[in-house]
Image 1 (cartoon, rainbow, N blue to C red):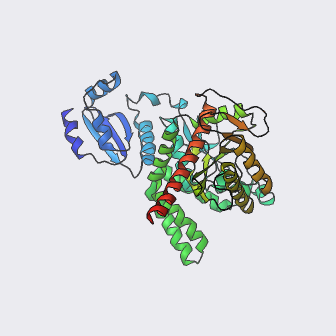
Image 2 (cartoon, rainbow, N blue to C red):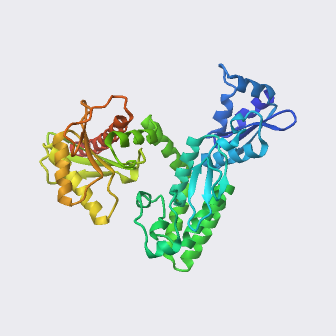
Image 3 (cartoon, rainbow, N blue to C red):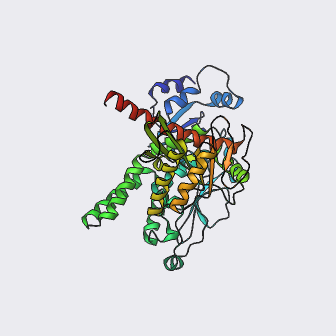
Length: 429
């Protein structure tokens, strides 16, 4: 114990893996940390410890650690070391068949899946101790490597002849859409090769390869290819920030997004999960600095790249429904021009008046979301276009809470913009 305590001041405030060892140098516990200094020091703070921690510290004689470039790499290294050494106090992975793995299917266009199924024709990585952290990590890695995570059976010849319409993930730059022939088999195979290399060797090995290929593409005047590789390099270097954003988004919700979307589908009678939800709100002060906002949620989480702000140009600035209508019209007119995906649910802040104004705007554009709903503050009653009676749910209902979060985020976003314009007009800066 004293020998380990002497190491604590020298531990770096960096992500990595720490290993408690016994008197014979055998690993007895392996853990990961966003900060090695903070995590290992927590074992020695005063206070009650559970029986497992007491036993661990009673048998620990020495401590080793390894710094990684990111929390994701710490997660991967922890799983590899636990699998290799099987430490006695990592009891959660003794029956590793019940824990999730990352599977890369052996297909012309491989899919990357988080699963507990060991019967797939796939290359496996893991198992991993915590499913929620693993899913967050794979989600962050998908933003870098743009692999597909669907279960479609894709044949290159069929795709070339009759490409499918790309799904939402292509439009938000999380999948290169092999199903829609947006990427060649060779290019997609390289994406998967880079992902596997990351899972085996970490970020640095992939960065070396990407930089070499980018330079070669630039010298050969293949500037579009070089630009894509540059963007991938940038995303990979920002991987830690991507993961932190994912943690922050989940912490904001305070509910499980998957459970909330399941409940929302059932309450609204939808045939599938509402993966894309957009929320609209407006703000003004006695007609001055009238603005609107649209926020985007993907799979129940905020997708900041899809947020948009608007200055009201035509509508009566003292008429909330009219301003809602203008924002909806401008948003969906752009979607129609760009052939962008429409939301499964469009949520407007307000009641029947705002709902009707949004519907008229959508009719003018000529495209419709899957479902149009309104949610007014205070009443917390859901108005659904096409249904005579509003829905009054319990305040703790997950369906209501996810809609409230979308509505409140739209309100927060528009208020920030409104205050900025008001300050600029008042102070002249």
